[in-house]
Each structure stands twice: as structure tokens, then as C-alpha cells.
Length: 193
Image (cartoon, rainbow, N blue to C red; front, side, top):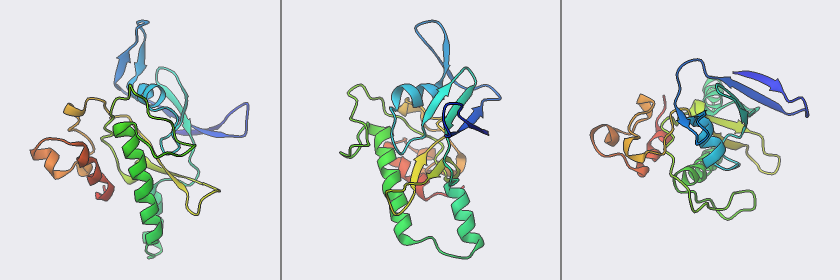
């Protein structure tokens, strides 16, 4: 990934280039579209806790830049300083991730002016790669803690039945030997790759 400044503003964006085969969908026009772009652009309307896709082409995504790194960076910094993460931040993180998961699984989000209204045609999405390095941190000047932003929908799917693959250490044990359920998405919140 590379960092760029938008030509029409001082806003920074991340350029993510897909270097090898990645899933695509067929459009009615006969063209193809990256599946991750379809999820972020078409199904997940702008949401404050989901990474913002500014634009894309066949193999390049221009995404929101989250200046505070990711949860893995934060965890590593706290470990290096031998300091515990404040409990209040852990609860804040859990609350924000629960809101993000509720949205990608059901389309529901708490009644708040900055959250989108439920879409009656919503399709549940299973992320399949939830881990600290895919949860970015964005400053929030209106809150005591920064926002957590769910990112990297590269192996996400709307096919809940076949959603059994993912990052191996983030797959809940029950999903390996039994049926996959939406409730299984709580496992990666505590699993650490």
C-alpha cells in the first residue's frame, strides 16, 4: 500500500494494489468488478466504523487513511512499554466492533445521526479475516478515544453458508468441526494471530 494526497484537498488516501488473482463479480454491463469493491461501494453504504472506499479501478483501491495505525500496532506498543491497555479503551473497542459487526451482519446500526439507515435489501456479510491488523484506528476529536475502523474485506462474502474459510487462527473451533453461525464472528475479537 502507498499513501497519496488527494489533488483537490489536503486529505491523505491509501492506494491498495491487487497483485494477484482476486474475486470479481460480473456486472449487467458485461464488465467485471472486484468483489471487495462491490462490498464496500455497493453494499456497505458509508459507515463511520467501516473503511471508506473513495474510488477504485480494476485492480487498485483508493481507501481512507487512518493515521493512528491498527490494533496490532497499538498492542505491540503497549507490550513494548510493558503497560496494560486501559480497561476503558478495551470496552470502547468492543463496543465499536460490536456496532461494526451488527452492521455488516444485519444492516442494523444504533439510531445515531452519523450512522446510515437500515437498507431493506441488505445482504449479510461475513468478513472472514478479522484480526488486529485489519482494524484501523482513526482520530475522533469529539470522543475520548479514537474510532476503530473495520477494514480489508478481501475474503469477505455474502454467502453465509460457505463462509467457513478465513485466517486460520481467527476461525472459531466450532466452525472447523461444525456449522458456521453468525455468532461465530465473536471468536476473532478475542483470538490473536
